[in-house]
Length: 240
Image (cartoon, rainbow, N blue to C red; front, side, top):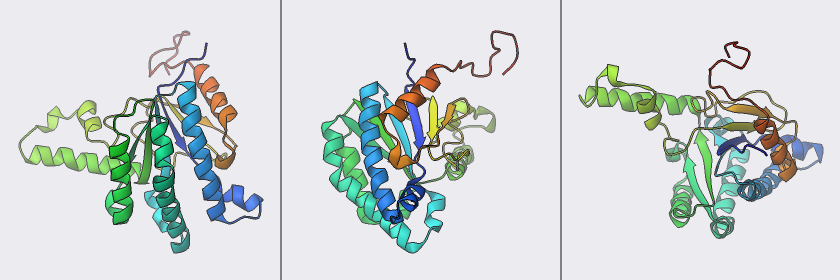
C-alpha cells in the first residue's frame, strides 16, 4: 500500500525547452504548462493528496525579458479568470503566496476574488507561489520577529523554530513531505528553503508540459519507498 504524502510541492520547469523542441514560442510552452497544472491539480486530488504547492513565478523571473514577463502575466490573468470556476467546482481551495505588491492591481484583485470564492472548499488545497522567493520570505520573517522584539512583545531568547515558522507565508500549511522538480534540473531555485528541511526530493527528466498522472504516480511511489527518519538513526544505527 502506497504511503501518500499529505503535502507535495512542485517546481514546474521545462515549458521553454518543451516549446523549443517543437519549434514553438515560449508563450505556447507556458500555455501547455497551464494545461499540465490543471491536470495535476485534478490528478493529485484523485490520488488523495491534500495539499499541493506549485512554483508559478519567482522573484528572479522578473529579470526575464519584458515581453516574456508580459506574456506570463497575461497567462496568469487567463488562468485566474478561466480556470477558477473549474477549480471551484472540483472542490479546490486556492491561495497565493508571494510579493503581491509587485503584481498589477487587477491581478491582485483576481487573486483575492479567487481566494474568497474557494475559501470553504476542502477536496484539495492548492497554493500558487507568485513573485515568490524563499530568501526574501526568510528575511521578511526575520524582520517581523525583530520588530516584535523592538516592540517589547518578546525577548530574543523567546525566538524558536515555531515562532519563526509562524511568520512564514506557509504558516497555515502542514509540513512539506515531498518536493518534485521537472525537466532534469537538480536544484531548488530559491523555493521553500526553510520548508524542505526534511522533505523527500524527487527529480524527473520529464518537461513540465508532459508531466501527467503516470509521472505523478511514479513520484508518489518513489516517496512511498523512502524511509523518513527526520535526523534519527536508521535501523543500522548510523546517523542520517
